[in-house]
Length: 288
Ligand code: KIV
Image 1: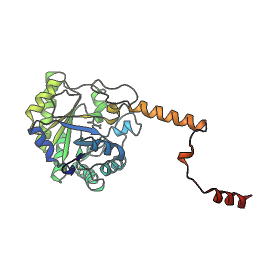
Image 2 (image 1 turned 30 degrees about the vertical axis):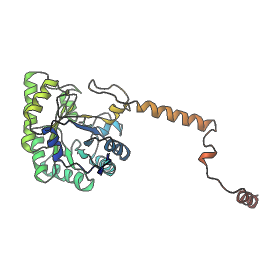
Image 3 (image 1 turned 135 degrees about the vertical axis):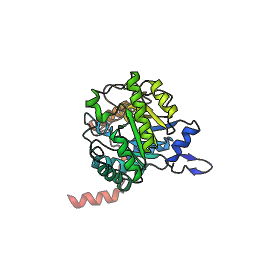
Image 4 (image 1 turned 180 degrees about the vertical axis):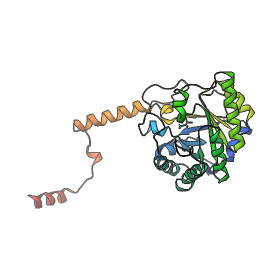
């Protein structure tokens, strides 16, 4: 983002999100997984670029988020960091990278911060995850929590379903969010829950909530890049608003290209390198 008076916007510190909550300014987050998309997101003024483990499905073609590895997430995070100037880059810790022990969680969070240049990491769940969050934060790396629908637990949850739809279930999510704040998280994602549940959690926490399928009263919103831009194939969750039809634009461009190549219409003279006639004549004369 460029400000005409002061030039390019400076890098946002992690503390900026808490300040935005206090000023009642909404936080805009989006998932990004590569260099060009992070440049575009940053240029649009997004506050948080989340290298989501949704990359497993959106860019790597797996059918859940579970198979994506640390090495794959590190490669994607490095590319995103190269494209970002202002936004806070949060790397999602993939399934298996933090569940086993605090020591493993710290070691993998350090890889994201030191080797990939992420500003923070995100971990799913509470309970033992709150303990992992505290350990990572004690090691000096900021952590974003994530409660409600946590896709790494999709098998346990019985599918990609909204959470917290009974008073008891809603209370458990609120307690989990509070535990993540108590552990020192700087923000928490609230995924797929009724708006009154997310609104009440948002009011009770001092850290910002970032909603996805959690209604308008969260402190910020996040959407998956491919869903937002119309690049996803298949059924979109109810909470997605598609802001563009980029997939259709790409398909049209590619089929035009294929057809022009087949018909010999591409490349035309304007897409080729000129050579003086005399040089061409000499070159061809030498050959035959
Ligand atoms: O991986 C992801 O994209 C996420 C967001 C949906 C919050 O965790």
